[in-house]
Length: 329
Image (cartoon, rainbow, N blue to C red; front, side, top):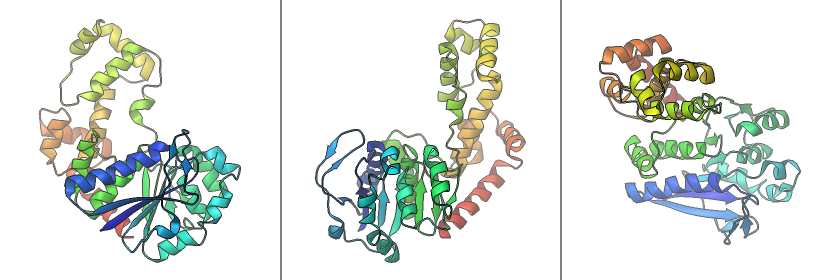
């Protein structure tokens, strides 16, 4: 039986807690593996940052953790943390939490929860990440932490940190894959209506959202059509017909509002999708090329080599080697 425990601090964020907890719950249901979810707090009752009051949780003393268990601190309201409102609560963790690490318990954090680990000295010399809004504060206040800015989550010597919000789900799926197998992680993602787990090296800046940083509804719709069904071959005429625009007008609007041609945008989305499938599925290169909308595998390989400098197979092997090295470090 593996225990997955969450320490609930005052002002905890609901998504930081609920998303990862759901991953571990689904893994236990779908994989028939023994995972026990527990929730603990310092003060008993906890009010979330979204003002929802949670029922009394276990006390720290009631948590019986052992080697191989996972203990996670979800994010809390950053402003509350910065002004010292949680100092007394964190002080009560100052001896207890490092003692769990000494027992062999895997420690984790989501979003601003990394600041709590840093305050307790648990990120000194470790590669770590946090929500992008917290990064400057983490670097300035805790210079011994090795902050990784372009990561969704980081594993380093039995401590795992994530960027927060939905990336806590990615981190939790990575743990399920580590503890069991990629198939169960994929089943959990499917159950939670998640496409594919994002790799830890993904940037916190979502490319799709960056290119939607404009205010034209028809261009939004064009991007959604192009991104949501990569396996379908769209011609400019097909797209313009659905949007009731001329091909010339659509091409002009798209380039003006996104800075890219429709073809270039589509190819970037295909490469992103291929990257996730190569790293987190057992599909062959040919199957992945078809899933990305290529009728011939050599088209996919040619585009991939142009973008990455290697063949898809060589890139996949490199990524697996990097992941194995980081997880065993």
